[in-house]
Amino acid sequence: MANPLVSVIVPTKNNAATLESCLKSIKEQTYSPIELLVVDNHSSDATWEIAKQFTDMVFVRGPERSAQRNYGAERSSGRYLLMVDSDMELSPRVVEACIDEVLGDPEAKGVTIPEESFGVGFWSQCKRLERSFYTGVPWVEAARFFSKSVYEATGGYDEALVGPEDWDLSKRIGRIGKIARTSELIRHNECRISLRRTLKKKYYYARYAKAYLVRNPEKSMLFSQAGPINRYKLFLSQPRKLFAHPFLGVAMLVMKTAEFAAGGLGYSLSSSTQPVGKKGNRKWLAGRRGRW
Image (cartoon, rainbow, N blue to C red; front, side):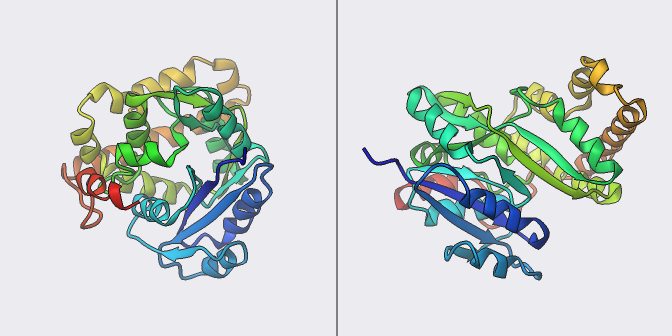
């Protein structure tokens, strides 16, 4: 029996620095067949040219990552979908391991792939330390692999959300089945982190947090995923890891505290229905299911 086709969808925007390594890691997967789709958000660098070296299925779409992913899913032919960000690199068996999970367990409707960070510079090392605490923590990790039928049944990514869209889709998938997990890794290339850019990003994402709460009214879920209390509890639950290098551990906590402050400011200045596009809700997505 032939292996099912897996469509790997990569949204991009000015990612020339990391895209080649990302797409190369997809091409080097042990699993076959794989269909690669790149959905670019009007890049002004060499992103488009790099993408065309790896696949003919390169499209333009915006305004945000959720819309790009949904469009990639619309254009895909695979029975299964894998969502990969353009600053990620897959270990060679990621797709194979995800297929093993869903074919080996009929209850598995999605698969979480653990991530580890790497990068250049001090703040990148802080981010690497932070992400190491999240491995195996279900309220932080989110499914990236699922069947196209499950994706359609749950309405795809909510285009009104920016930042928590992965959690939101995982939550909906979890309502209809099990979220499995593989031990294969995604390596997240942080490059050289600027603290200023990181804080601006957290501020930007937090502007959409109220829209997430409207769709997920269980406040404890948002607090556990993005709030400071449970994050600090998680960090402090492993003091040997946190303070193995004391200066790095303290700096990571300072960075995270600054991120929470930036996020709190963005949240306080946001509205409950922050739009990102004309089609920013699951009702519209549900209406498209018959046309996938």
